[in-house]
Image 1 (cartoon, rainbow, N blue to C red):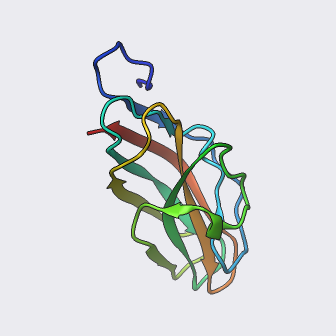
Image 2 (cartoon, helix red, strand yellow):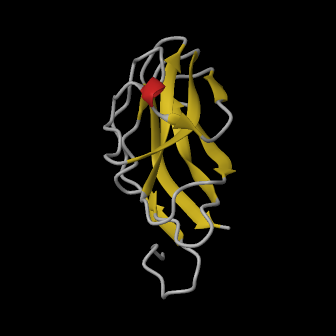
Image 3 (cartoon, rainbow, N blue to C red):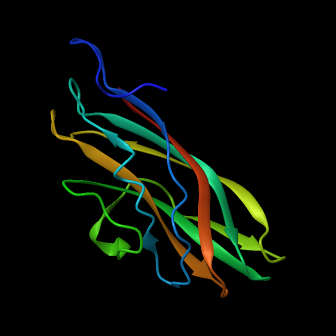
Length: 147
């Protein structure tokens, strides 16, 4: 794995694995608290591409979840924080689990331009439990790079 502490003249890049956050029963999206780990600091262009992947589940039969990629600067969002305060960087993905604890893989992809150079940016996902149960993500990993 590499981090964004690269020699001068090179674009920033980060590849890290996250810890498994607590599940949520919230029917509105809440943050998963991965942003303290998934951080990049643009150094040359302010154009950042992001991929966050892992597994997702709901512990209830006929439950599901929605997952959206979000980012910010400053202090990263805590697990369970309301998602509405944070910028979206991906399309919301919707999952449905027919059996309790079905596990699916997920990948959220996105990017943007015009971010301030030298300002650390954190990346996270927000999830909502749809159809009841407790929704969760696990085995998360990210790839962030400046273009």
